[in-house]
Length: 455
Image (cartoon, rainbow, N blue to C red):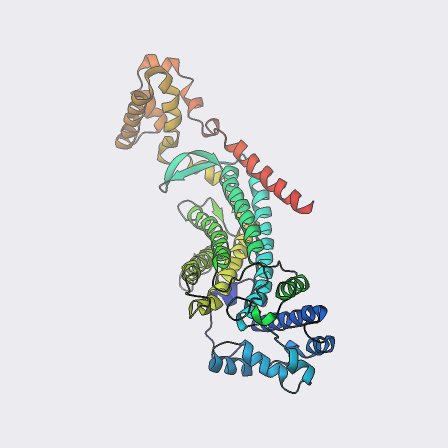
């Protein structure tokens, strides 16, 4: 990497090192060389080039022969990297290399096929990070299936739920994202060998067989029609990466909200100076969550780029393709960073169940107003029951009463006698609906998915 390249603090410091290596310049050059070798081997098997030429290309198309600085210099002049790559590989090579290297292919064939190799590896790494995050969520959801806490809507107390039910929603969402990831990988793991105008004319009468042979050697699928300008598969992969990052980002935002000083229901793992402020000694900032949110925003920002890159004219792009060169690595590395950070958050998350219980009593216990309304509704009707409980809530606020006392003061005595004891009716753990079952179903769905992986 050139020293003049920009320093990207988020990705370089907090990103996933494995994904960074997958998208490195060295890995990309290696992939280009690997495609050239596979092409030559497939052509030699069919008799399109001499076997000796393919053998020589295997020896000479070695990424260690490539000078990256010289390659970039050549690319700045040509506009693309493959011609400068070929110049370097042919330099000093025997005639068997110069005669048959890159036979019938075009630059985008090599770059797109190499991209398929790199991108599938990146998506595989993303799948590992999804699995790690899901496994950690599964453990936490199971542990806290019945840990009662406040559900919040519009950032205000709503009704009681459990932490396990909250986490089950993330867990199932992550599972759907994993399904999309598998489909996206299949769509992009394709060989690209159709030549200059997409007709494969230069590859000769056995062009389809050449593609099949090259694809088999690279572990990719064959393609029936060219995709030089049909970039929907790449745009889909970008969306999948960004959507997974968004799931991780939503989880991180939840942690940030629940770890606010006045809420304090969860905290990230601690440590000396972890999340510390340079000026406020008391601060313990949720840094992993902040990092995750940053990565999710960065990933989302790349999707419009890939959508715009879907719109070149004729049989070859004129600038749209170049936008992919940066946007795809960015969305993939940002998604990996988001999922990796989210996995760290969940694996180290500290849950304060006692604080969750205390927060249920904020506003004097008015979080139980729906429970009171639904108990009263069969006697007086849903609308009138809402009015009665609404009046009790207003009374509690104006007179600074608990919700229990306000209800006792507001209810008609005859109605109060027909209700269960108010203390029992207003217990948060008695109004959980399916919350515990939701937690169990989310855990079961993830366990079944992981069991299918093993099978």
